[in-house]
Length: 114
Image (tube, helix red, strand yellow):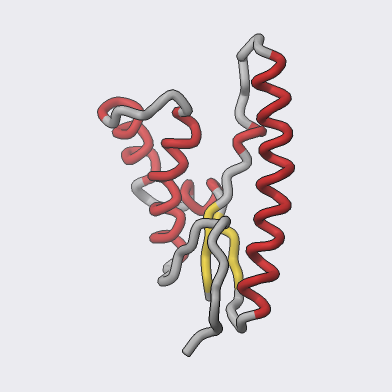
């Protein structure tokens, strides 16, 4: 099994009045979904079972609330806070799933399992 993490940041409440930012998010989300589908196909073709972890998987970890609050309070997140936070929370999703092998969804295999 190969895991990746995908959080549709387009579903986050965007209070920005900047319409260009909202349009960019929509285009990015659509492009990300296409890349995610290609990721699944590439790993499947090499004999892996692809599984996409989500924020729901991260929330199922018993330390989610504590970890999330610590990120908000003590970790300097960049200008794209939702994305930066998701980069940390994906590790909780992985721990909660009991998974072993994690890949970014824009990384594809060159060979099958040995």
